[in-house]
Structures are given as structure tokens and as C-alpha cells.
Image 1: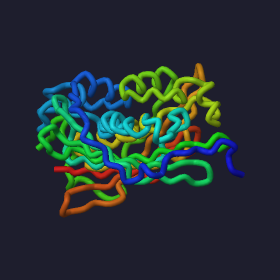
Image 2: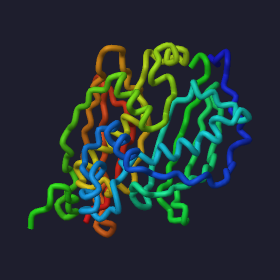
Image 3: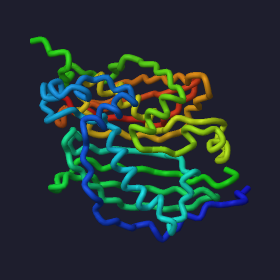
Length: 155
Length: 146
């Protein structure tokens, strides 16, 4: 049965590459708050000396922290009225991170959003985005790939 | 020589079949608000019952990324260095339902499924359940160890 109100994500967005976004400063406070929220108790998230003992320049972000930066990049697509995404109907289908090096406090990170795939199937839309995170100087930091599912009204 | 308490686990000490210590977390609505604030993901389905039900969910659900984050914390605690995680991926197969005034239990278990001598990496397969149901699918982290 197809939903009475099927989603209408604009499939022509597939393949779109957005301009590199503004630099975002990763602060120690943001790293600590995120670590607390995901119950990451390792001292290297909270204490710069513990992070340095492991060879990191400052407190280290948890491995999923990159989603904060990636979701900001995703917003360019998700919140673009032309794309037709109803954010209230978005659920997260899949997520991968490939870390080229750990994110630490003090990093200035830029993101470039790629819309790799847009597919509407049976009234639901599946969107795969890829955020390439780099330092402002161009050093690769993380590749974050998200698959979002936009649920149709009756799904 | 003994390792400092925050030191990374050594690759040579890891074998296929090693199990991570199992961890159980209790998630409340307040924990979802804390994650929303820390991550910037303010999707109302994670805070508001009406918003969740309007899109066909049974109740407020945890952010998939919060559940994934809990699993990541188990991996880095085992690895001994948060910077050891070189890749981490999952599918979000079932929601973690968080009712008002109660806590949802999320249980994280893991097992080393592969090791790569040349890269000095170990692959950890994670099993994450809530209310007896697997909530993550193909949850897998690769850690590089000294």
C-alpha cells in the first residue's frame, strides 16, 4: 500500500557537491560535553594531560563526534526547501566514519558536502550524504557517510 | 613493562575472539536532551511524544547517533585510546524507545572478529540491544593499536 502522502525529495540533487563550508572551531568544552552525552569516560576526552600522554595535542573527540560537523554540512541539503526534505520525518538509516586522524580540541575543521545518492522507493526516500572533513589547511580529518530515511506519511 | 592506566592496548595482546567487557546503560529523556544539546541534533522525535507519534513511531526514540556513541565508548575504553578508532559504522535497525518517566536499557557487547598484522588493526563486531532486541546492525569498528 503506498502512503497517502508520499515523500517528494528532489532526485536531481543526487551528485550535487556543495562549496566547502566555513571553518568550525572544535573546543575542549564541546568535546567534553559530547563525551559526557555518549558516556565516554576515557580521560583523554576530559583532561588535556591524559590526551598528551597518548600523543594527542589536546582532548580527543569521541569517534562519533564528527557527526556534529557532518550534520551541519547536511543541513545545506536537508534544510534547502528545494530539496523537499521534511526534517520531522527524517530517521537515520546508516552511518559510517573513516577517521584519517583523530579530531582534537583546537582543530579548525571545514566540511564539504556531497549528495551521493537520492532514491525514492515505495513512498520513502533514502538519501546518502558524504561529508569530507578537513582542517582549514586541507589535511584530511574524517569522511562521514550518512544514510537518511525520509518516511512517508503512512509508513 | 606495565602500561600507564590510560595507555593503549597493544596489538600483540589482542586475539580474534576476545570479548569486550559488556556495558549496560540506562537512557532517560534527560539523557536524550543532553545528547541533543551536545550534538546539535534537535529533531523533535527525540524529545516530544506528539512529534514521534506524528511520524508513526511508538514513542520518543533515542538518537541513533547516541546509541552508536555508547557503542563507540565501549570500543575506545577497550582500546585504551579514543584516537585508536580508525573506522566505525553501523545501520540503525530498530529504535531505542525511551518512555516518559522511565529508563531504556541499552546493552553493548563486542568481540574481536579479525586482526590485520600488517596494518596492526583489529576489527570489533558490536552487539547492541535494548529490551532484548538488536538495535544496531552490522556495527563494526576498526582500531589501530601500537
